[in-house]
Image 1 (cartoon, rainbow, N blue to C red):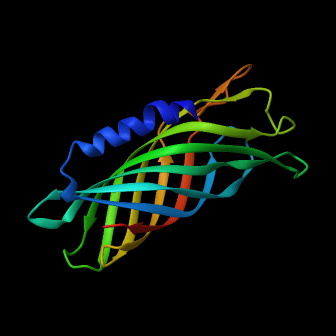
Image 2: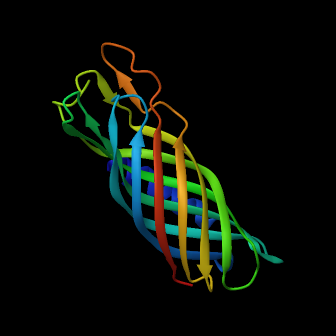
Length: 199
């Protein structure tokens, strides 16, 4: 949590303050996500979790209201349930502060329309809950950083309320190992979010 307070938030504020205030929209976002991690635990079941945070959306052109760059800071529940050979489930939960940087394209410059979005995402682990009795729990070690790429689609109502469906796939290995190689383990997250803009 200290890295979030001392580094991530100041960088986010500094970045958005470098643009003119009039071209920005600020808002809050909340939603639900279904997450998993490939390979590391063999058989696994998805975790359903929550996400919430803040958004800043920057209009890239004063002549067009179709092209935007959007930055988010989201607290996100991720991870999975691991399953042993007897069918027992064990927690392998991890919570991230995720910072997606998304290019956003609206199909029209009217108030209500559909949009597409895509871009990279930085993830910083702030908490985890790994059941020590789970499969390979003594071998796997969570890393503190994740890098993912997101694609999504959504609908905007008068540019005030928005709903979006997004899929994110991890680009880096999120687990280290102590004894034997556990291959490359990437995160995945499907999320449904609702956004409210203040201005």
